[in-house]
Structure formats: C-alpha cells, structure tokens
Length: 176
Image 1 (cartoon, helix red, strand yellow):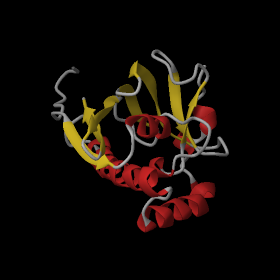
Image 2 (tube, one colour):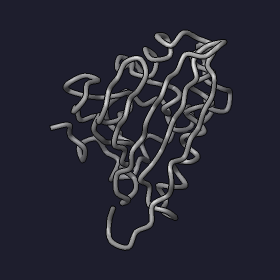
Image 3 (spheres, helix red, strand yellow):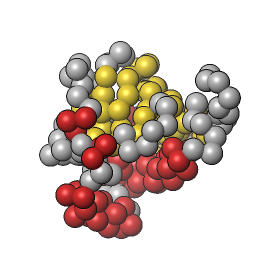
C-alpha cells in the first residue's frame, strides 16, 4: 500500500437480522432520513447510491460530515463496498464492505473493514464503530429502534453538535 505503513487484515463483524434481505438492504442504503445506527448521519450523494458516486455521511442539518468516500461496488441486495475516511482524523481512507446473505431465520449482515493503518486512531475508532453499527442496525431493522445506549449516545451527540471540531464541518467536505 504505502511506504512503511503496516495495514491490518480484514476485520469481520457479523449478525443475523430477522428480516428479509430486501428490507435489510433498503434500510442500509436509505438516503432519505438519518440512520440512527450511523449516529443519526445519512448517506449524502449527488448521484444517488450508485457505483462511482462520491458520498459523505452528513448530519441531518448538513452542518457536520463524519465520513467521506466513494461507492466502489454496488450489487443490490447483496453487497456495497465503499472507501471510508473519517473527517476527524488525518489517516488515509480505508475500505468498508457490507455483505448481505439470506440464511434460515433472516439475513446475515456482515460489515468488513480493511486497508486500515495498524495502530492508527482510525483503527480503534472503526473497530468500536463497526460493533456499534452491527448491533444497532440489527436492533433498528428488527424493532424500529436502536438500543437504549445508542439512543442516549445519539442524543448526546445532538447536544454537542455546536462544539463539533472544525475539520468535520460540512463546508470542508463538498461533494463536487
């Protein structure tokens, strides 16, 4: 990849969601409303959810952008691959893959991270974030609500929005 940097192997996070694959896919790629399992951010794209589209994960008021990237691969309802860069950290982009597979009892949902610089702040943040997303995506699809802890965290983030670090401000991350 890049000079002397060491990259971690793929990290897999899996859960079975008790819902049809089409429902799980629809919730994953919904661009119309904040996704509580993504800390109330929403997919923001000019070209829609399509291969090659630039995206950002924006707050509902479009003032904060937590993640930027490109949609690398789109295979509905089975696979979404994106580049993924946290706007709050100086680390290079990594790759996040969402895999859906029909299984007995529902849909196996896998979130796979790769190409993350070992020992970086992004590695630690993405590990915690992936666990949060998988747990709360399952809860949201199955019940219409994320976990109590996630609801409290999202409320706290909403209260702290005026103190958002300058690097995360939306004007720094246009889609053009």
